[in-house]
Image 1 (cartoon, helix red, strand yellow):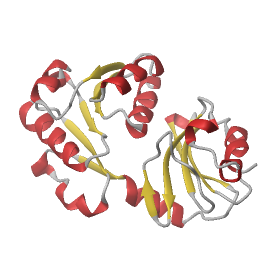
Image 2 (cartoon, one colour):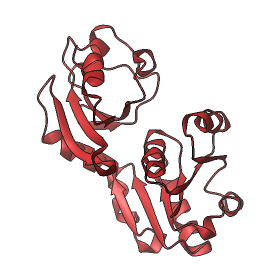
Image 3 (cartoon, one colour):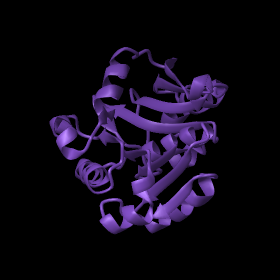
Image 4 (tube, helix red, strand yellow):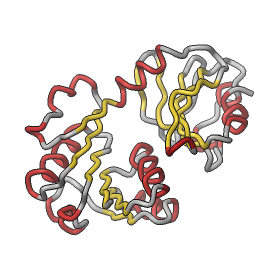
Length: 222
């Protein structure tokens, strides 16, 4: 299938990697030029465009009319709604999937905005974390990519290397087998950035290769 993803953050890139492993034709649109250029080398097999998916001309350039699926995965709910509406109404994409960043906006993500399926990332992560709060334990939340990947969660203790050494996500130098997709702090879901520091009692949600347990333990358990 031809799939277009709008948003080159941690969510969009993780989806792109998963879909390319399943041999789909994947195009990723990222409006920040420097980020798009970096992703071109990090996402082999994915067509990365430096383009604003909220603009009709950008969607036309990405051949969205021929797409089977559009995934609006940016970190901005307003952008995701605009992308969904344009994809459905102007380009007739058969299936539009949209990310919801703020659960309070969930009521907007309906067919009237072109959304076929909505995914509330904060609501999903918070509900998963509620079920797994043991400090220092790696909790398997769900399998991905036909069992080759998994979504895992770990609650950080005071002795976790990321906490004790006050390391940023960038300084952790995580291997390619791991990707932090979210952090829940004080019941608030946070989108990770390279400059983020980790605190005791943070709930870190990661997408991990099935054999990456030790890599995760080295960074977040110690």
